[in-house]
Length: 469
Image (tube, rainbow, N blue to C red; front, side, top):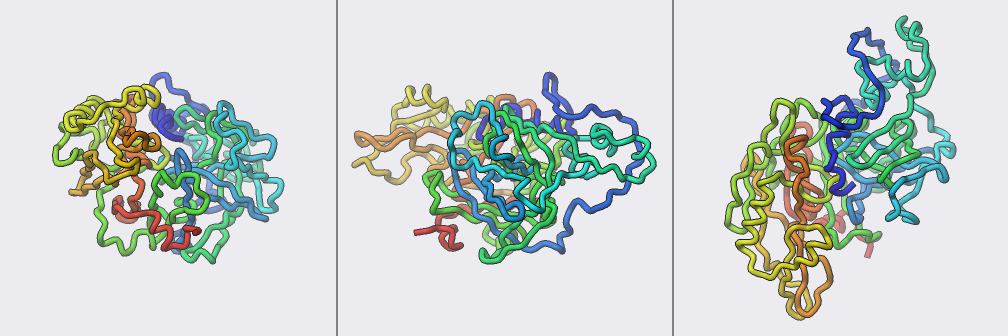
């Protein structure tokens, strides 16, 4: 996760039926363009909205994202995974001894590395090669590909009887520099209702049972708009969801979590919210884009925002992705550098260049901190202005963040924005999770809009009984 996800963001897209970039890595099947008859599938892949009820699940902050607990199987096994609005597949590490992550030394012996054991669940089974989820994850141009690869007789498939019982072939799913490889599995998912004391079972929930990863030590709950995503499988794509990310100071605190609300409850009674429209990217329709019109620093407007941050080109590049799976906000060049110049012209505190070199952040300052206690923010505010006259003043601590404890009546604060590595390909910018702290964000999928309302998310947690004292 974190910002590394951005460096090859749309490599992941191309390995899942997206246009291919030069030199990109594509994992999965090779597909023909021959149009074959599509058989009738023996089950429905998506629950109808009328079959759903509101859900509320706790989110817990960690150093590079927010975790949701998945209760899978009978008896249930609890696996913590990242909540990610920038992808579709939900997957968990599988096998007590067989799960292996390459280049994950930072997470060795981490308590979050619980694995799911299908053999311990009486309701677990491999997904079929005929499943629409299998067809989706392998980006097939026709519905026969996965079953043909699985060894089914083409003669049987062409007859339309669709009786081949073979499981879905293994997949490899890429996330920028990371890869997760495994098998599609179905099992019972237990979710909480709007009342935390009520639960309900979702049978045959489809997810990745992953045995091998590269730089992906923790599973992911995909909240995109594709058929594999958690909201899609539960029938919430015509409703919505909302979250209120806790401030970073609560990271790894087991006594507090914040509510993730899914369903009608998430989008009702939001009269005080300011909503900006979701932009429709024809080439990448499963992800959430918004349009950025301006950024102001204090009362000073930064240089003109490029139109690519609110428009798409003919190839589907552009727009601003809102992504809980990317830690910091990314802006394209030269706009990002111009924003840094505006900040430097306003801020007169000495630069902390040694900290910049050590952390990789581009703008750090040594800020006064009388009596070694944090005072009101003495650095200028930063406001994002989105389409439809929506202005979001970033809460204190969401732009410049203290990198250490106060010392000698001063503290070093760094701007936690980053430059896009390749602003010409994929999204032009990304609004990351760090800048969404202490903001309730509402994904109104019915009206295709996203709303913002600054608030103290720890207070929201307490009001929902999610803060243990």
